[in-house]
Image 1 (cartoon, helix red, strand yellow):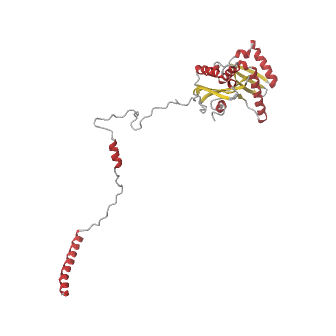
Image 2 (cartoon, rainbow, N blue to C red):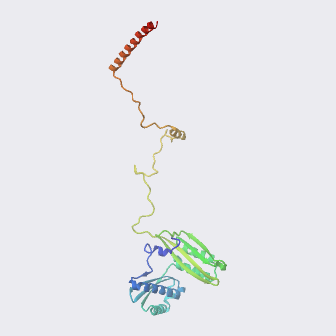
Image 3 (spheres, rainbow, N blue to C red):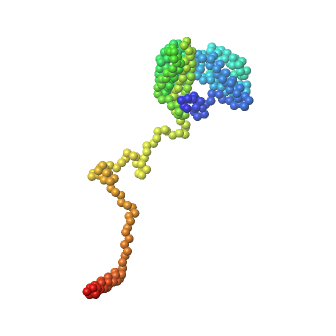
Length: 300
């Protein structure tokens, strides 16, 4: 899902904050949401050339609205002696019928802002600059500014081709599934004579670690028996050698002895019983010898 959804929306509540900060009842929630969308669209359209990166909205009361504009060119927004802010404030109050407070904040490094990078590529495409050249120049500026990685995707009839297609260029690492990675996302459209072109930009600013987290580098494993490192092994003494392959084969071929061998039970005979048995055998032998001549005479 990291490749499908917006990286900003996926990380809201984890490492990123909401663009609108206010609480509302069920009856007013939808009205506030629609009003926020209208205010953002109006300010973005009016200050498009000033390089507006983000518009934050805060509501402290029902009839007050604070608009925080993050821009790369604050001088163009303020105007001479503040006339630009006064005009913008009057138009917003007329549209929302509320008290408007406007705060201007400068984006110091526009090369590291995904929205401003996408808009710069779109403006270059409108000036008929080659899309490959515009994309590669933007990637070079961003990586030179210190980004960990960047990915740029341009869609539409690139170069005036009849069939629309996508062109993607990337450099560095952009982990979309890693929630602790600070991924900035921007989208812009270029209006050309042969149709609209879409530009998407992902910029990786690195990973954000909590204060309680330890260093991600794992400690070196130690041997549990003696507390020494794994590399501290005892050297082989003279005369010792490793087992050869022949020794291992002989060990495998040996038939293991049975654990529970069957012992043949032999009846133990006492000495007195042996003497009695011998005497009986002698008596029987004498009887057989005496009976043999008697039987021979009877036959004659």
